[in-house]
Image: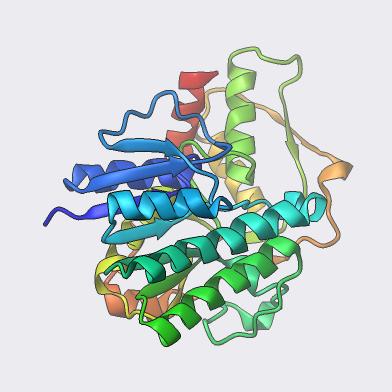
Length: 316
């Protein structure tokens, strides 16, 4: 059945992939963006694409009134923890006030609309080795303004559901990567290796930080498929972890990449990338989500990294 769907955060790499998936299913999609963090030049959605700062209450209300969505995938956010320290005001205004504007608009217009809140593993804060894979009932103790904003966003969705019956689901997303991603370890490594292959820069060095940190990593295409499943089968009012099942040391990622490129390279550990506050491991349990939706990871990290190398070859 064809649905009317609003995707906020089209300017982020998850948004681009999600719009492609929804349109391939035949949905009518409104895609909104503000200050894109991904390259949109090669993306050609069939539906409406509109610039919208979610902090603008009148703009949000107007789009809701005009489009009358049946589903909203709320992905828009200031999503970088480091930026949230530099500009906590913009982070809170975008992530919290923007979320209020969406839910208030749905409430005031009386729309029959289900909302997926894209939340974050950053809500948990520091998790010790013996607490992983972390589950949904773990205490939420975020360590930066971004994490705090995501807790607030999730709680807003919950209270609008409990108080006003607006159906919403929160998905706490763990480390996600894939073609189009910027500023994570997989993106930085694959981009640099393509630069080396093309002779961009002088030295064949891969700049790294702590090679012993461990992350469970999920391909973005598996994640957006999970979003679609969540909207159709998960329980409203609930929060779900969405995490990879296998944990990788950063060193393992480097080793996989050595097998994917046709040249040798030196690894250089940059002291500036060694952060004392790096979590030693980020890994969540997705059992609750898997039980309700039958979702599972399908794309291995080797394919993800190969596709990311191909992506950078195409644009550098």
